Image (cartoon, rainbow, N blue to C red; front, side, top):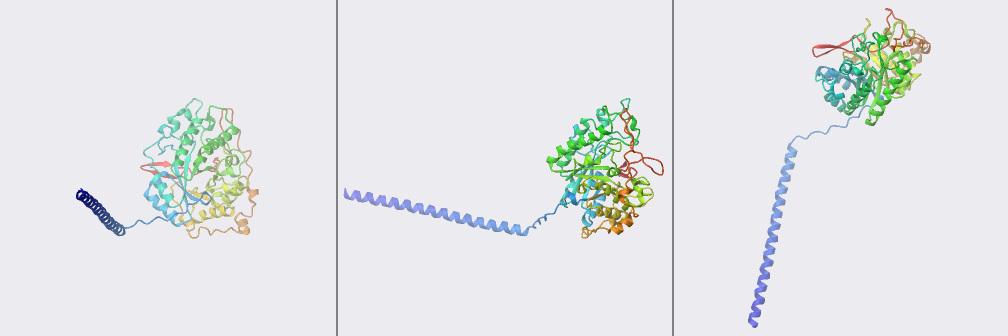
Amino acid sequence: MKKIFLLSIFVSICFISTSCFAQEQEIESVEILVQQDKIVDSEQEQKTEQIKEEQPQEEEKPQVEQVSADQAKGMHLTIYAAASQFHKTRTNDLLDNTEMNAVVIDIKEIDGDISVKDVAGGVTYSKSVPSVLPYLKAVKEKGMYAIARIVVFRDNVMPRKRPELAVKNPDGSLWQDRKQLTWLNPYKQGAVDYILELAEKTADMGFDEIQFDYIRFPSDGNTKNCRYGVEHSSTTASAKIVDFLKQAKERLAPKGVKVSIDVFGLTTTEKTDMGIGQKIVEMTEQVDYVSPMIYPSHYNNGEYGIPNPNKEPYRTVYIALQGAKKRIPVEKLRPWLQDFSMKGVPYGPAEVRAQIQACYDCGVKTWLLWNAACKYTKGGLKSKKDQYSYTKTSDEKIKELLKYKDPNASMQTRANNVNKPANNGAVKKPVGTSANKTTKPAQKPATNTVKKSTKTVTKK
């Protein structure tokens, strides 16, 4: 029995030894496999790093400082110019090499066609209007300031699609101005909602600012036939324009975009609504920037005591801005300046520079250039490196440029120039003086044209 017991113990010891040896072997095998995997992983990592080193690395784009609203020095571009390689080459040269640092791009012009989908059921969407997104992206990558211009009530498409939103004739037909263009009725909330819906979708594209143009009632054509469906007067007209801006502010402010407006040049000194509903003081309270169109060519001869304002760009712009500064905050002023020739007076570098200098002399450091053909005078602009080199003109020199006239005395009183509207709701045009006896408030030019594909589109 003792032998059997000893044999059992020996067998057990052998079994345990064998099991331990097997476990050690298994552990060693696992360790070997782990080591092999580590070697393989290490080799793969080395190969990956080698491949990465051999591949060309993309350079990280440096952060571009974005231009702010109060620094904007911009130029107007039609949406067709923004999509044209020819125009983009020319405008990029200005953005890259001159003080120009902002663009104002048409999203909706007076013809009414738009490229923004899903607005008001898409009734004004047109495939022929190019998308602004590619150019907008390129502009923003340069750090430039981007403004979307939307023509508000002058519209030759929506009133024909939805006549209930239009200004009408006494017989109920669509009223048309002297260019045979229709107008949206500012009193119709449906018309307001259409414009604001377009503005919201435009803001979502990435624009920094929405600029409303033609934010007024009709002034050209047989306005005595205009019918709005409600009681219409100078008081109700100006109140409705301000109400539009209040609604725009409520809907656009949450999107973080600025809101600006284009107004007639004479609004800087005119205290009435000029028969079109524009009162600059009340309108300015609702927006971030105001752009009076103070083109010297669009002032009547004799305005501000200047025999021919078109021939004296510095004097005209200076007096207009001095008038504006007395009525609205200077930090909200961003005027439109003239970079086109009209009425036989050629405009070049000297004339453009004179207007810009007048702005700086009035403490206005942000401005816009208008040319319907989107062709701008590079020689009238400072280079990028010299863009901050403007200095104020001496008081003695300003007096000389103003022909020793006090700008306050030069501002003509125009309070009684607008006739009260008749009971039929028509608003008469402001009365002025000119060589040809016609009345034409300051506005953007209607004579310049820009070619769109094969047809010519008249721009204001």
